[in-house]
Image (tube, rainbow, N blue to C red; front, side, top):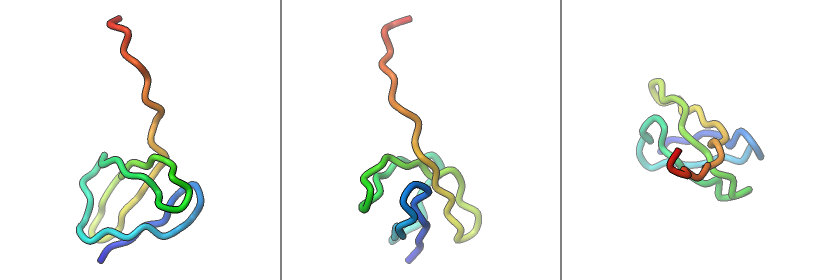
Length: 58
């Protein structure tokens, strides 16, 4: 099992397999959207995901 800490609330997030880079997920504690920034060996770095902006066809 692999784990990382939420960069917002600090709670531990567990992974049964290593996530892919740029994979989106939600923190089970604070429910914020997170993105996997990098996976180096068994170390998983998470960051707050950017806000989704609508595409108005511009």
